[in-house]
Image (cartoon, rainbow, N blue to C red; front, top):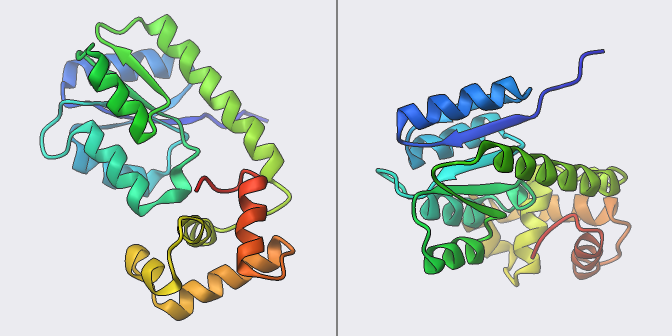
Length: 201
């Protein structure tokens, strides 16, 4: 049976660089989607749910920093998805900012493709190891989101506003997650989810 290709999303406003990235990564066996600004990148990310994102920092409409910050705010379920910045900015402050936002790696241009491929494979292998440990508890995306915000101290009303659902629906997701995690209380469910690395608070 043919192995399923890992899906990569490249968000890069320079079309020549984007085309080169696509060519190299497809040659290495990846399925690649391209987006040419941060807003388009966010749309593609939610539509295709890639396994890993490569993202330029200096882009029109939304910077790479803004993409990662917004993603972290509205979709905690993507917390385990590797996010790698590609940039011509080699400054320490920029790298620190990226890492504080949750970026997994920071690759400067011109890109050394052998190093980039090594980083991509290492990050995907780490995710695969984590997913094996999570397989026994099959939480939905919404359950992950609700548990994550609960772990961050948000009430059901606040979570409902953040993720665009009603309080009743949020409570239903949290109760379903509690049952799956074999917890008697919501707090215990959150603790179990954190211990099992199902969420990142």
